[in-house]
Every structure is written in structure tokens, then in C-alpha cells.
Length: 477
Image (tube, rainbow, N blue to C red; front, top):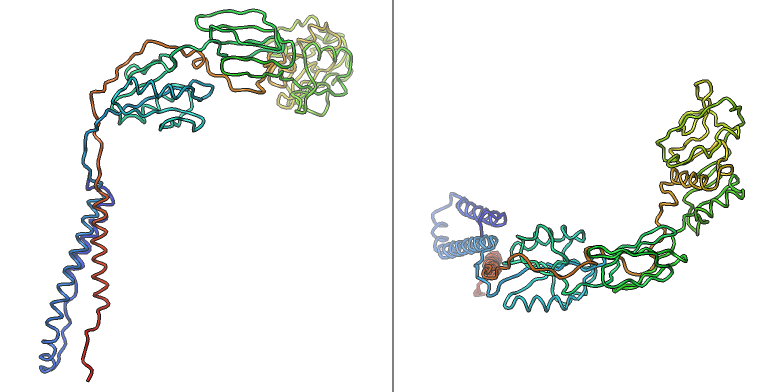
């Protein structure tokens, strides 16, 4: 309660204005009239003047009383009374996937059993409104540390805090009492699926192997709290089932488009070796042998040139030449050369008598086009040509086909986080002090506002009667 609230200051200033207007009102004007007229009107106006002054004074006091009472109400006066029960803020960590909550009926029953006589308020993040009790929804859906920080800000007025966590969390020791979110671990909950076109890695909690169809188990390895399973896919679709549900993964095609420069048998063999596919309705990630579209890898783009006396210069740190056996490629044997020009990045250059005469491989158009003067993919051994093509596609598209994620989730729920999948009971820690009781405010500003309104209504009634007086009954003669 404070009189410094701006509504109270505004209303109190109104009271000062009313007093000033009442004090500075004009007195009666003086006029020179005859003695007879004065004596005739004195008797008639004496009683009316007294009544007007009395009415005016009552109106002024009513207005002042209404303003003062309203100003006091604007300060929100209240009495503090102690609660009969401790108010406990309960944080409920999501069990996943995402911020989904499971077994909330069990959560409510556990809290009520552990806190007899207390009034719990549940704080949780959830995707839907299917919460079987009144709860405060946290705005943060980020990592656990962010959610706990949000909970701490919103629970400062509570007597105690209880945190139901998937795992012990650093920084919560002094925040309140931490207990396990789940009463028992969930076996075989998958939390990570990744792989390439020929390998699939599935990680799950220990205790029960997930059911996988469309792939053959190659090996498994166990850590302290999880198991990693390595599979070899046997088809374009894989189904992974665990305690949460079934998920379907489909092979993610690396779509390539081909132009007139990519039509030979060696070219087709390289596409099969890298397991590249025709685009399935989506734009290709890269074009091979196209002179117009990009990003592209273009071959045989050079002109005939005598390279019998030329030597090579290249950038050994560039991604195109990573792990590449340069001796397997006859860069100069085709006698093709790209004429020097500005705005390009030379990667392999021909040098004659110590001076560069042109490029054998170069990047242009901000790295979206990789040009080869000849066609090293048709003349080199298949393994080396496949590695060169893998590097070349990675340069212009940003990802090498051999390193791309081979499968993507097409149907089923999202994967939980590792923390959610490995949630398990732990020894509770922290303190929960229920001896204190918070004081809750009981405001009575509503009644003061009502009283101020009645006073102003009464003042308005008096003012209206004064402006429109009823005529007194007279005698008609």
C-alpha cells in the first residue's frame, strides 16, 4: 500500500482543485438600486440564500469525500493473513519426445501423497492441454536448464519448491527438493538414429533391444547406460519400434541431374558406385555434365592445347583433392586447357617455363560451378574416379554423397532426447521446508471504490436537483 501510486496522486490533485475552486468563487456583484427595491428583495432572498449555501457546502464535501476515498482505493490497501497450508511449487520435467508429458495422473498422486496438508501448484511445459489438474504452463520449451530457470523466476512467492527431474541436475541443489520424475527406468527407448546409405546406427536405453525391420544387425556395443546397434540396410525403408512407438525411416535420395556431357558408360558406373539417384520430384542437388544449370560439375570444358612441356601446380589443401591419389589421373594427357580469365579460382593449373598458361580444374560463379578442362572421370580407375566425383559434388553442393545422412524420418513420433530416454530413479537430494507459511493479501480496495462511487453518485444527484429546481406551487388569481 502506498500513496505514491499515480492513480492516487491524480485523484488527490483533483481534491486540491475542488478546494481551490470553492475558495476562489466570485462574490455577489454590487449594483446601485433604490432603497425600496432592496427592502423588498431582502426578505424574499434571505431564506433561499441560506439554502443555496447549505446545498453548495454539502455538494463540496460529498465530492471531496468521494475523491479521497477513491484515492485511498487506488493505493490497493490490503491486510495480510497467513495461509493455512504451505504453498509448494512443483516443476515437472518433460519425458519426451519434445516437451510431451507422460503419466501426469501418477505425478499428481505422488505429489499429494508426499506433501500431505500442502497446496501444490504444478509448473510444466506441454504441447497440448491434456493436463488432469490446474497447472502453470512454462513458456520455455528449450533445454532443461532453460526450463528450470523459467520455473525459478515464476515460483519466487511460494513457500517451497519440488523438482521432478529425469536425472540429477547441477545447479538445483539449493533450489529445492529434487526427486526422480519416473519411478522406474524405461528399457529400450530409442533416442538416436543416423547413418549413411549402407550403415544405420541406432542408440537406445539398455534393457531391451528395439525391433528393426528392413535392416540386418551387424554389431552392438554397450556403454554404462545405453546400447548402440549397427545395422546394414536391406531396402529403402526401415521401421524402428520401441516402447514409445514405431517410426518409419526412408532413404534420402541424393538427386543428381545429368546433361549432354555425362552420358558415357563410365559416367553411369560412377553414379551407381556412389548410389546417386535421379531426383524424385525435387530439384537435383547437383548437375553433372550440364553447360547451363547449376550447381554443376562440368567436364570437357577446355580447348585443345599443346601440353607436352607443361607441368602441374595445384592447391593441396583444397577439398577437391582431399585423399585423392593424383598419380591416377593423367591431367595433361587429353591436351585440354581452360583459358585464363578473371573471377575464377584455379585448383589445378598448367605451367610452361615457370608461367601458368591456363587451368585444368577451376571454380567459378561463387563456387557453384566446377569446371574440368578434360574428362578425368572416364580415364581414371573407377575407385579413384569415384573419390574425385565424391569430392567434386561436395565442393559445389556443400555435402559429399558419402557423408550425407542416408535416412530421414517419414512417419512416427519424434525421438526423445538422450536425457529423456535414459530417465531413471535416483536418490533424492535438496531440502523441502514446509514449516513456513506465506502471507496472502486480502484487498478491500473494491469496497472503497464502491463507496467512492456512491458518494459521487449522491453528489451528482444534488447537483442535478440544484440545476433544475422544481417550481413551487403558486396561487393563480
